Length: 122
Image 1: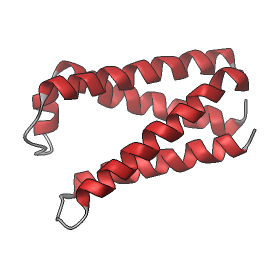
Image 2: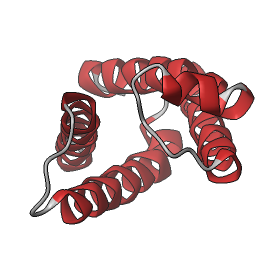
Image 3: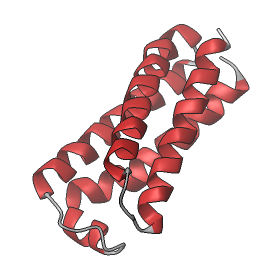
C-alpha cells in the first residue's frame, strides 16, 4: 500500500468520524452551528451513518495494509465523492451560497482527486 493511499485513508477516516458522529447523533444542532437550514434529520442521520460505515471499512483496509483490500474503497471513494461534488455543484449553479457550502464542495473535490490519483497508482 502506497504512502499516499495510507494518508488518504487516514484523512478520510478522520473526516468520516468528525462529520459522521454529529450528523448521526445531533444533526440539527451540528448543522445549525454553521446556519445550514432547514435540516432533514432523517437524511442527515443516514448520511452520518454512511460516513461512519465508510470510515470503518477504510480503517479495516488500513490495518490490513493491503492494496487489494483498499481497491474497492478507492473505487467507491471516486464514485461517492465524485457524485457528491457533481451534485453539490449542480445545486449551487446560479445562486449564492455561504462560504461553508463552498468549503464542503472543495473538500469533496479534493477527496475525488485523491481517490483518482490513488486509483492510477496501481
